[in-house]
Amino acid sequence: LPPVAEHKLQPLAGLEICLTGFTDPDERERVEADVVSGGAELGRALKKATTTHLVAAEAAGHKFDAAVRWGVPVLTRRWLADSLKRGVAIPVAADDTKYSLAPPRTPAASAVSGSAASVASSKSAAATTATGTRRASR
Image (tube, rainbow, N blue to C red; front, side):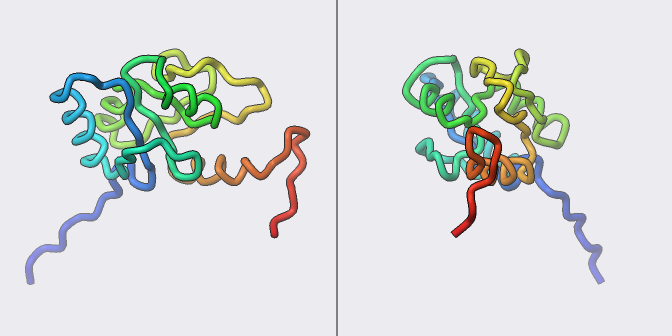
């Protein structure tokens, strides 16, 4: 029998990453390739319901502004490269200055994590009201 190949979860599996601000076509192509090779879905458009991370060349633009409003983590190319190097989506706190391009969020906002599980958890947290009480599901 042939040997069984090892199965390893890709570091960005379960994430949908959108890009913005990469004007050099070669650089954009490299960043897109990194996203896909890491196992993430490459989102062409920023979508409030499905985009888990925005990787941005700079802290500017329509996608950047929308991501900040929606609470989508806005991260640097370095976050992507370091996550691939470490083999895991690096969790990023709301006040992170190494990887985050977004301004710090209010204390009521939860910490941002790179894991798919906490992304799902933070999407679930969207049903929580400003007072911290949970709305009933319908």
